[in-house]
Length: 228
Ligand code: BJW
Image (cartoon, rainbow, N blue to C red; front, side, top):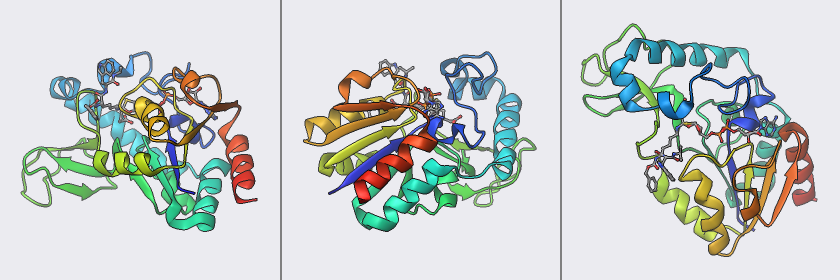
């Protein structure tokens, strides 16, 4: 059985990573739709760099939780038949042990050069405008996908959704496309669909089944069922 899992900010919430649209959301009073844009970066690059530099540093203070660990255990059990598509830019799936992970909205620990478009692994700050290791131009930005930009890995994602027998969305509000549309695509291609989320999302009604609760509890239980 081919399983495709889509994860969002809710899976990392119990690790201490704030979500976007809950009360204590990441952008401190700003709507993410207003600030996570290339236009906002053009106007205030220093502010945007500080925000991502802080989040990159915070990665060192958080750890995978039982939901990330359960997905790694599922990969141990079914191997190549599992693909995790994450909207998250943290590296908690990888640190839990998952290897089959696509970061469709980019990664905190990567920098993108606006001059030569090279992607470079990056663990330090970007706010001091360091040169690109490839071309030397000081045009490095966070390697993340903002509104109006094309998410990464879309070809591989749609092939996987097309072949999936089971599609599971975990900890995502269903407010952002194209990820919010994956359930319809997978369902149309014949997959069963399941949502695991703290509260009903904007697209709960499109899933065959939905369970509400903490990811750290729901995901290990669901993985036990699947492997059992
Ligand atoms: C828990 C929990 C716990 C909490 N346990 N659960 C009109 C209609 C349709 C689409 C559009 C439109 N106008 C424009 C668009 C397109 C636009 C879009 O979707 N806009 C919306 C505002 C409508 N999308 C884009 O521009 C995208 N690109 C694009 O579409 O390109 C064209 C294209 C065409 C065809 C095919 C493919 C592409 C790009 C979107 C980029 C989003 N970027 C961000 C920032 C990334 C960098 C960063 O991290 O800073 O991505 S925005 C932000 O939202 C981030 C997230 O990945 C994304 C989704 O958020 P997520 O993960 O769902 O988090 P939350 O906070 O919303 O929800 C958390 C959930 O967890 C909640 O439900 C909680 O209840 C739950 N939860 N604790 C379980 N413990």
